[in-house]
Amino acid sequence: MSKEKKFQLRNQKILTTAEKILKEKGYYYFKISDISEKLEIAKGTIYNHYDSKEDLLFAVIYPKLQELRDSLQKISLSDLPFKQQIQQAVRITLESDYHQFLKLTYSDMAVLFQEKSQKEMTIVQEEIIQAFEKILVVGNNEGILRKDLSLTFLSHQILSILDPLLNSLMVDSEKVEKEDFIQQTTKILLYGMTKG
Image 1 (cartoon, rainbow, N blue to C red):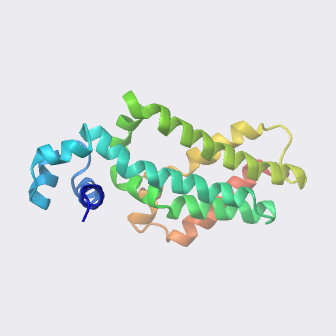
Image 2: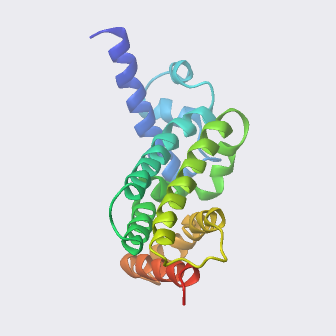
């Protein structure tokens, strides 16, 4: 096996292990040594892959954020009517790996919007907001949306209403079934932005 292939395989093991530990302990209690102990490799080996704990967290979460963006962009390019696009966007966001990971580590994510990973995280987040805005354009074109609300404002509001903390408080604590949460969230969004 080539050195590059070994490096890639070890990297995948590091990422998988890091994600499990992050979900169990949270970012602030997570240590690089947790991975080295679990995989029985030297801490220095992990630092050959990632310069810091922040870089490792970024490597775990960033592909999940990109996957969510890609899924939302596909919805915005579909021929579905506006209300179905909104419902799919809500469902995809709430069921995404990114959202599920955030539910477990929400308070720790601020670190990703600092320092060197901030630019990449902000770019993808803006692309997600743009995907929501494209969905809203469909509603606008169908004459469903209120004219007194800007699409940019609504796009940001959609992202904020899909807060992982609220989802965790309601669904994970079994106050509301997941499907009911999706349906009610979609109804609230539609009620607030469509013509009465």
